[in-house]
Image (tube, rainbow, N blue to C red; front, top):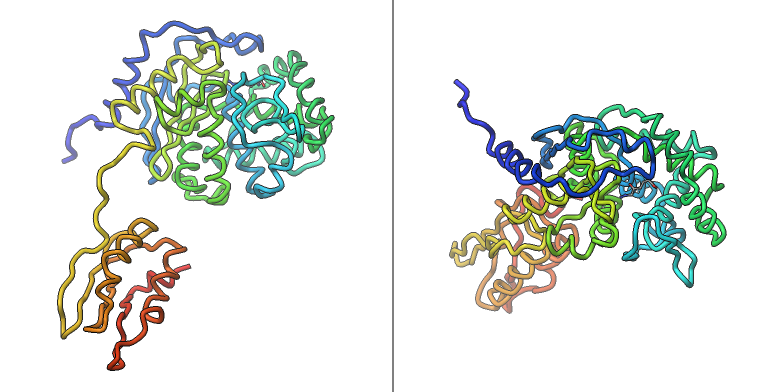
Amino acid sequence: MPVDMTHPVLTTLESVLDTARPLTSGAVADYIPELAKVDAESLGISLVSSRGDVHDAGDSDIAFTIQSVSKPFVLALALDEHGLDEVTKHVGLEPSGEPFNAISLDAETGRPLNPMINAGAMVTSSLIAGATADEKFAVIKDGLERFAGRDLIVDEDVFDSETSTGDRNRALAYLALSTGSLAASVDVATAAYFRQCSVAVTARDLAIMAATLATGGVNPTTRERVISEDAARWTTAVMTSCGMYDDSGTWMVNVGLPAKSGVGGGIVAVQPGQFGIGTFSPRLDERGNSVRGVAMLEALSKRYGLHMLSHRGEPHSPVGSLRSEEGRTVAELRGEIYFAAAEEIFTRLTPLMNDDGCLVLDFSNVTRVGLAVKELFRAVPQLVGETSSGQPRAIVVDPDGVLDEA
Ligand code: DON
């Protein structure tokens, strides 16, 4: 019989909602008139693990427009399509320390400072394949849908409202065009960007999209690879430095998760390798970040130590046991071996590869080896050579071929 127990993660998310609910400061965005029509009290949060488990609390299935939360995902699509070198010919990677709609172009290159402010985001949208706004948006929508794992629709009323009040964005796009950064006409780039901002999503969609960045580009609910691992890492890096506009530095200290906010009231946050979170609450602070969304993520991060730079204690040693067997020393290695574990193995075991005998590096219980360190291990027997009596100083035992996997 199933145990009658509320999932502790749900209890956690609900307590975080309770922390945020009393906060009534801030205001719903109204510079795009249609945005002001949302229910200011809506409050939701979802967390999706990198295995694809979904945990929803509160209004996690109420639709709202994605707005600037689209920026990292469209950046990811552009990076996936063109690579970092090409994208950075058009837009920089430096935090601007300025509001989202600032006139912020690099004095030397003329590029918008980063892809998270509007000027840079319109440049990113202009880089997406397609000659017309419709063609570009079709690629963007398809990409956002693969990130979310479901079909999405455009809120046409918000789109119309955004288009009719978008002169500041047009002005920013003209500036980016004048410096050679914009890769399409102003009309094409702004129309694609306005449509991308008007896509309707839920907090659950945002959590799945964030989890897709957390896994290095594979949507954990559909198992589809949406973007390359490189594109996911580059995007998460930009979110880390620029995702919360002129609050990004304070955010990284207090919350410590790469994130992106939007004036629709959504925030995405990524814990690389572990999970994604989506929050929704429409009232915004003066920087355009959701007041309750920030409070929820701060509370979660502080209570559960989610800061990505938290010290997590000493890792397990990769050397499981050292034993003597038929005149040889056998080092049984274990777990996942990346650079730091390889450093420990070489530091501890190299002195044992001496003239008195042979060291066996046994990889039978190793589950994974980092790409770059594989080569180091494969080269060991040759590097340390033979004893004066012609015996190998080191032998690598790798029955499952973990050192051979690409
Ligand atoms: O560019 C704009 O004005 C909006 N469509 C998106 C801005 C946004 O979400 C800024 N984020 N906090």
